[in-house]
Image (cartoon, rainbow, N blue to C red; front, side, top):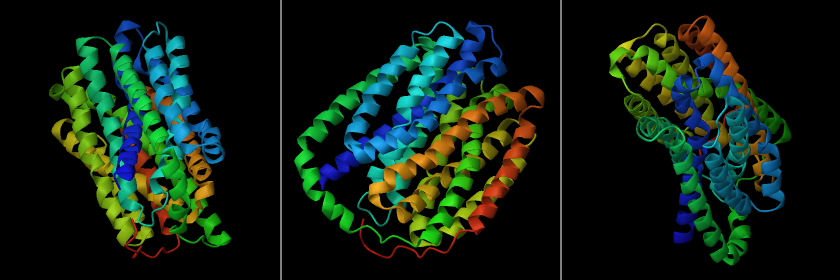
Length: 396
């Protein structure tokens, strides 16, 4: 149905913008270091409150979506985060930008509990839809470095917040028109969508799986934040003469993230066809291996290894979301995703000062050693999952 495809497109664009906004500062900080005469280690912690809000505010966002309207919350997301991004462009001090980034984090927290619940609603095979949605999110991660680097070199760091802000507000207005036009149709088909969802599993299995989800989510959040937020600085140090400008650095980051995003399609297909436990374990094991190889890698080798470890970091993303979609009823799903992502983003927020401390004290080699060990813990957690049968139904 054309309406369903268009709605899915809006959700995908939302995921793209969500990750774009929260990572603009990661590249802009490289320029602000010069403007504000601060070191990388001094400046990065000002982004921490934004990631705290990104996590904590997911719970009320999920609750409001389940109790009020998922479509309404998505409209609030588009318009709210766009306005806050434009506001961020007016910051003149680190404290002001910290406040503005916190506001961005508050509105950014809406997407994952709300958008992902809408992506899986009415589907039995959720791996591919979540993978496609995840690719859009990761392209937002990639574009943050590319777009910000280009705008920093041409028109300054403030425009890197203004342009996406205006775009998001425009998309939000279009989304409001879309949901108003199709409101009656959505209400009439809601019950039909719910009727094809999977039956709930036992309470014991639910608790077991959700405990593993929260454990691997927490560790995965640290891994994801360390790699996505830190990659511009990692390349700045390790690509030697390969990246001489912010724009070129942004292109390298964009290339790595874009290639790695494709891994989600592969993993999404695999979790729909094979046991999730096996797929999850292999992804985690490869993460550990590639992080270990990255220690002391330089130049072109560092670039190749970065592509490898980002493939499996991004590849892990849809796995826990598929698990949540399979074990939680639709009426609770936004809150379940909210709980998962409050853990993810709370860990991501705490990771920033840790990254800053490790980099300032020992450098990135120690960080990659820690990431390798963290991936082994995820591997152990994946092995504790129960066996889930592949989805054989033809439902979408």
